[in-house]
Image (tube, rainbow, N blue to C red; front, side):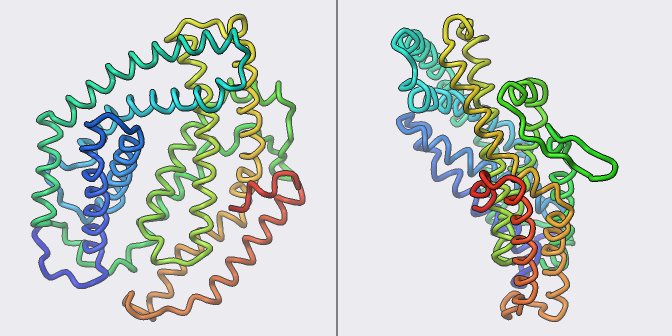
Length: 368
């Protein structure tokens, strides 16, 4: 474990440093805006920076020799405090913009009163965030990153060419994503024909989600980790790799909206003591409609990523980049990836064709 002051371009350690520096600076950029407490977007962007910083630390962990205050667990602890405040901001925005205008006057009156309670909770949460960002733990964390960025230290593996380690960095997280049980929510299996994708009616979807929403929420978190890690290395790959990132981003968004509807209903019941069926029946109906619509939008992507062709093609993209680098050892040399891109595009068209032929009304949600 020593300082690598003479790292050549394109080493594992070089890219680790660039990623840490980029996302750490993004986090710091929004710190003052969060403390000002005027624009919720500042909090959102700071959290995004922290999530990506955590992904960079985890993704480049074999190369990094970070000081203890700057390790991933320390960043996660701070991020959780910000997350509590962000959840309240999202709930308030969702209620005000998405649901409130659709409610009858009696329900609007009750919900507006609930929003006042939400504001009180936000003030308490904001005080905690302010205390966190001006506290010793946060200061030690930033001092740790500043020290490391001025004099970075790495493990010996940091000297390896990034091309040599790309598949080993990407494939483990991809496996966690593709093997997640959330893919099988609402899917039946037949020993002879494989997966059976049904298009259930709304009550059936509500029951599926009531029982298994936790699996989809966990898959969403896995999608987020996979997307962020893939984005770390997007400049090494081509358009088809980027298309997969967009697909995964869409999965993250759709499953996130389903989860948000459950978080909101739980908040109304547990925190604000509403009986939804009796006091807010229209609000409950709107929540269920969102769940059903997002479920319909999710199914084509669920089908696409359960197809073996999709999984094999994505793995192939990641591995063939490494194989191509054997004859083109530096990133400064332009690599001829046209054949790989053409084959990848054909697989995308084939899989999307299968999905659209089975559910033509959902074709637009598969292609991003």
